[in-house]
Length: 243
Image (cartoon, rainbow, N blue to C red; front, side):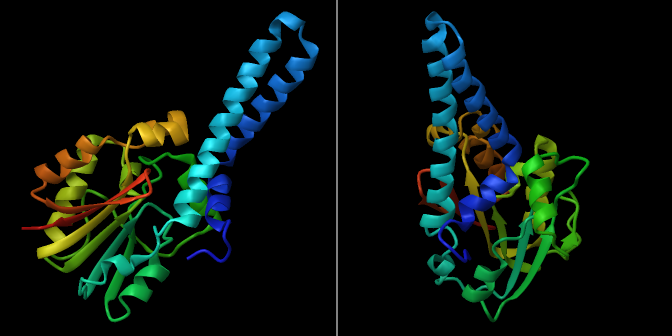
């Protein structure tokens, strides 16, 4: 997937450069303040500088671990499956299609973009779409334009959390279940809103959802968790079936 060992983290910084620019500005202001403010304020300026530095370095190092050093894009772990009809649902940035084709060259794969600019307002996704435009079919999360029981595999790779509305997510998973064949597989890959992601991404972890949120959506949609893989401390992958 990556052409060099820093490509993944470089993309993350590029997509979120507005936040990293604010962080850099905070470092400059607190650093200058350390030298210009009276001595009694030096500890405050140093504390602010240290916190900002930690927050930015933690997210960069975690992103490097996830996107450049882990097996996140190595789909050989799915070799036991014989998928013939694959639906890859993404939120505007289709990064995994080369790995899908490599792992399942005989399968028919359809990629569909469920990003709706009116409802999904995350700036990093807008920037990713700008830098890496795609021509995939645009679909509404609550009304997928595919026949009932058509796909034996649906992929949701680091994208479902972009649907911020609870009811829309519920309808989305119901639609996914509808287009899955009986005994079909949904592979859901996500960050959780948990300690590891708070440590790495601080307040950015609020953009993710707790484990119980995903479990509730799957249960309400009649989908069943078969297996959970841990890909680094920050990423979870669920193998989910339609009974």
